[in-house]
Amino acid sequence: MKHEEIAKQIIEDVGGAGNINNVWHCMTRLRFNLKDEKKVDYSALEKLSKVVGTKYQSDQLQVVIGTDVAEYFTPIAKELGLDENNQQGETEKKGLVSVFMDTVSGVFGPIVPAIAGAGMIKGLMAGLVALNVISNQTDTYSIIDMVASGVFTFLPFFVAASAARIFKTNQYLAIAIAAILQFPTMTAAVAEGKLSAFQLFGVVPVPVFNYAGTVIPIIFAVLALSYIYRWVDNVLPQILRTVFTPTISLFVAGLLTLTVIGPISIHLGNLLAAGVAWLFSISPVLAGIVVGAIRPIAIFTGLHHAMTPIALQNFANQGYDMLMPMMFMANMAITGATAAIYTKVKTKEEKSLVLSSAVSGLLGITEPALFGILSKYKKAFIAATIGSSVASAFISFFGVRIYGYILSSIFSLPAYIGQYFIFAVLGILIALILSFTICYFMVPKQEEEDEVFTNEVDLHATAKGSYIPLENVPDEVFSTKMMGDGFAIDSVDGTVFSPVSGTVTTIFPSKHAIGIKTANGIEVLVHMGIDTVALAGKGFELFVKVGDKVSTDSKIAQMDLAYIRSQGKETMIIVVITNMDRIATLSGLKDLEGQHQAGALLERAHLS
Image (cartoon, rainbow, N blue to C red; front, side):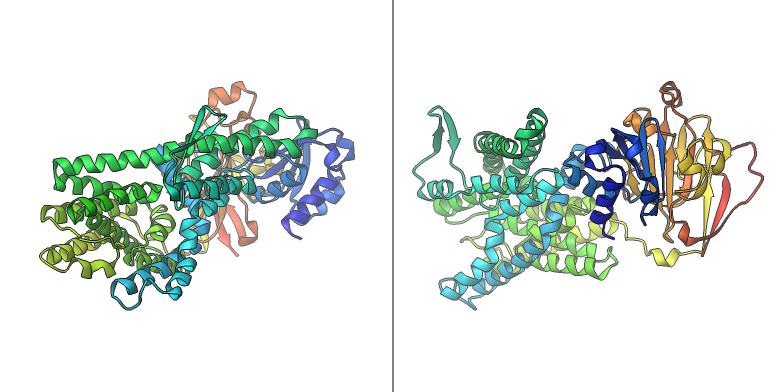
């Protein structure tokens, strides 16, 4: 049965949608608040293939699914019309830059194939034009350019759809916001160049801007939409939500985007451009250092478009420009860092994506590399930034300039032929080699898990404290081993270490549970306390995030034992192997009575 089918059956077996006041989930269980517990068909529930067990406790029906519970909660929430946004995901604290880059990476991940494909075509066409192989004045070129440029021109639509998924809001309303920004009334006003702003209600200015190909305005617009939509949906009575929630949300978010979010985003780009012009007035070399450093992040955010008018004005005023060569260096640095990632990834799919992104970057289209690759590897992004800055400073020192506007790709090199040609070539080499080298040494290689495969997994004490057999844990889900076999530790200080070496795969929002997967595929759940999901994260501090590598000496969390106990909750730390179908035997290795130090080897699992 599919997830959706099982979800519908679970709803039916707990008494139907009308019997459910609310539903949420913890790390392993669906938790229902019901109107009438007598309507629950326990027998039918426990016959479902994905239901491990059930229990009714603390006025909650708990349906034990396992660590993939979120995959069943989502269709249940959808079926019941509930908001699932705050029910799952990881909530560890991150820096602002990390949050920003993770968000952009999440937004662009699904649309990278479209960007990469279009970028490759666009780059090849630009290269052939630069080499005078084809003309850009023919109908054939225009038709192929439509194929290549459509994605980039209407990029806000793609970003809107993907951002809606990240911010958990209505996807079609998000696309509607993108349509507002690129409605013909706006694009025509931009093309005519006669109007600086429309007047809303006769007093509120709506600035006229070209939003084609922009990224930041629509991301922030969809983020605002997600909050507006949830607020409106919560305020309105149930009977009015279907019609009025989308109506009010679109109206408010649309006007907010046109009057505030969009213009601010565009002005940020203009401010960047003004700063660049000021730097050039002080020193071209200083401008090279700064422009080279900010160019990758400017492309990443869509603010790089503001630099183009400066370059065009330079051509008009002095017949040449020194800014575009820096753009060229940035593209080559991005390409170099991306190429280095090819040596770090291990799957054919990943290598193929990296290779196509690097080639696209070489051809002057860096969005696939930035959004699809470098956003996932922050050290690689730093490497590209350093390479871009150094190469740009180098060419600025020697006065490298260009005499006509051209796409910043490897095919642009003939345009530099003359007294600055050798310095342009050396700048390219610096950008490529430096960014590649820095990235190669900064970014660790993905581990080949099959090379470290063993037939055993050792389980270590997660904390200093007393060993508790799993059957003595005062929670039937664990004591009856519904979730798997293992043990518990009654911690004396609340410091929690990883029981195994592996990778953190899951962190529950309430911070009370962490999933770890070993190199040989054994999934281990570290569950801190009993019913501590109700504490909503209070009393827990985490030191890891999803994707982190951990070992038995890795401190993964700290429990505030006094606070947790004051809330009437048990504080024992439970360790279970959740995919016991992979385990042949699990046995203790020593006398487990008494107190143990954190990291002490307690049990060994033999794989089947």
